[in-house]
Length: 335
Image 1 (cartoon, rainbow, N blue to C red):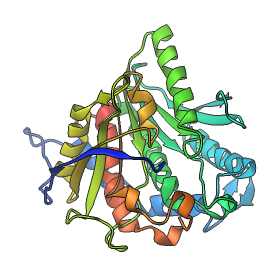
Image 2: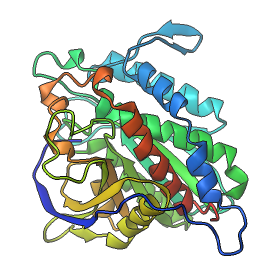
Image 3: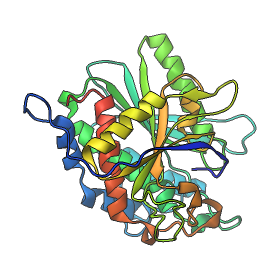
Image 4: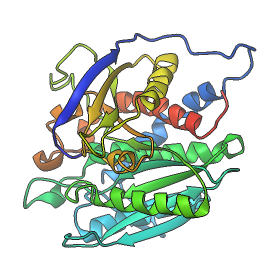
């Protein structure tokens, strides 16, 4: 997530925990099933690997991941991500691009889970990292945004397990150049996929951005309110041409959080801080969700120190559960 100005933050959801919704007929609640199937231990292990705490096996070799600022770090990540998605049986689509005015080329990777309809849900997380100027490769970017990436990879695993129940195609995207590139990776992919949808005649249902979700603001006394534990939901933003308001999409996520988890919800609008913005300004319903008060996080971006030990794993998993459940509902999983 890039540090810019946050616009119009509204609190609409100071909900306590509520009993989970059950369907009127007393049958199986498939959304509750997927909520319960989110594997916290797997998310933790994935984040440990992505943050360079423990080695990962990629293409038969034991390697250390971590930073994704330099070319080698980004390539190691893409190899890991591609292997993980291919092992799940997804179709891999590498997308190389050169953004105008950028000193280096960028690389997105798309993993496609084909459904009964070509209409598509996009789940996107940026993988590039940044750090203190001159020491960028010292920062592993555990929270920003390998916490969100660990949610994306768990979403892919669960969606494959529930593939027969999904109604749409799901496109998982690891995007480049969010931090220093002005969302270049997301903008490139958004242009690509909206063009493809137009020529092939399918709809883009939504683009969901799993943002940094592991920092506990209460530990650093930086929540700024009494809402913690909460998840922040941003579904509107911009000013003038290109502004957007997908408040109803945000309502859907808020309703899932309220129905299935004890988290509170803070609603807000956000400018070009995260990858969802690239889709929303092209007319694709989009939102991002994150840890509470993410811009107060003292451990990310140019500050450095965004390490695994700063992650509150219980809090991360508490956000992952409703986040994945919401995306399953968008992908057509029946309640």
